[in-house]
Amino acid sequence: MNTQRETDRPAPHRVLILGAGYAGMAAAIQLAARVRRQQDVLVTLVNAQDRFTERLRLHMAATGQQLGELSIPELLDGTGAEFVRGWVTAVDADARTVRIDDDRVLHYDTLVYGLGSVADTSAVPGVEEYAYTLNGPQEAEAVAHRLAGLGSGTVVVGGSGLTGVESAAEIAERHPELDVVLLGRDEPGALMNPKAGAYVRSALDRLGVRVRSGCDVVKVLPDSVELAGGESIAAGLVLWTSGTRVSPLAAAAGLEVDERGRVVTDTTLRSTSHPEVYAVGDAAAVRQGYGVMHGTCQGGMPTGVHAAVSVLRTLRGKRPKPFRFGYYHTPVSLGREDAVVQFTRPDDSPRKMYLTGRTAARYKETVTASPWPTYGRMKKMPASGAFWPRGGRFTRIRAAR
Ligand SMILES: Cc1cc2nc3c(=O)[nH]c(=O)nc-3n(C[C@H](O)[C@H](O)[C@H](O)COP(=O)(O)OP(=O)(O)OC[C@H]3O[C@@H](n4cnc5c(N)ncnc54)[C@H](O)[C@@H]3O)c2cc1C
Image (tube, rainbow, N blue to C red; front, side):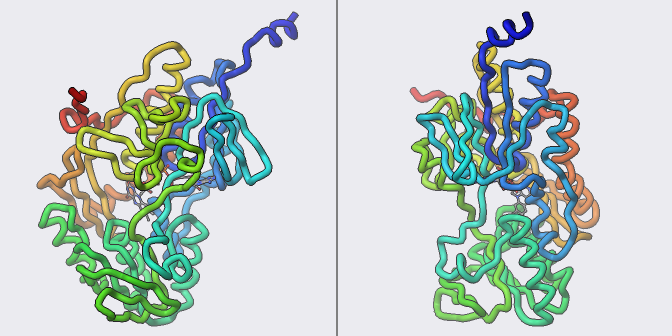
């Protein structure tokens, strides 16, 4: 009798989530927790490693600080979601399959694409060959190893954005014996309000970081960097943090992508060319009233949660709701004892209010540590993951006339 009933049951809807970063993980937990007791949806999460990479802490790992052991399979335990460890090598959007490590093929009915981003090492000659990055735990460990062996000399951090600032500050604090040079077009903290930006620069100065703004690196060599204008700076290590790029897999699969290769989504986070594909996190080009969102954990986790809820609404015959997200802060660490937290409007422009010093450092640490416990809470109470600022008039998209 039972066997008969089981064969009559329609095949479950297969939701395949690619990438267990901040966004993909949020999607997987949210969806798995919501469908736990129903057998009509099968959730599978694919990731290169079975340990969750806390990208927000990779500048700490790069100076030899130990990161937590956060096991993805352990977190998924009890949710019914399956975990597949492997490297995604191709997506076939027509056949609705994904190739893993070139030899395994997984089928999907709905795909959630969350393969994140890495530092753009292609824009400047020599970066790919000679510069170090914070693209993952192994890369960060390689930096730590190299720094520990340098003894003295110069470390050049290429890129004066927030990752560059955090990295330069961390290296200078942990390795006072090294000369740390932060190179970039813009002044560090340029997008903050003037007082908060000035605080960032004075903290870097206190830590002994030499800031060179208004310069373009045109070439990286094995032991130096060359600037536009011909100046050369000797470097025992070059850490590249400037710009990001995404996996070419979405474009190769024929999904509509923007000029940076990110999957273009509609208001509900579905691919504009392939509605059975959702895109989340850094890999997605998500338009809001203020423009296309830029990659952050702050905005990435909500995209994951929203995509999961949308998948489920669609399966239950309801219309998915538009995704809306407004930024609220930019926390930047300046070593372990200092930080700046710039509060922002929903479009990410700086407000007057900001925090500095130990209070800011504690705030930053709380934010950095929060994703993993958030996933744990979501596993028990999925609705707890659905709180983020919707951004009011800043995020509203006006209908085309
Ligand atoms: C040093 C540093 C500090 C940062 N600090 C902040 C901060 O303070 N606040 C903030 O909001 N943002 C910060 N960011 C940015 C933030 O980390 C990213 O925006 C965020 O990680 C994006 O999340 P994601 O899930 O889209 O991608 P990711 O976190 O990059 O995750 C993508 C996952 O997909 C996996 N993957 C990629 N390709 C494949 C493949 N082909 N096959 C299998 N698996 C694959 C990766 O291994 C990874 O696990 C920081 C970034 C760095 C590098």
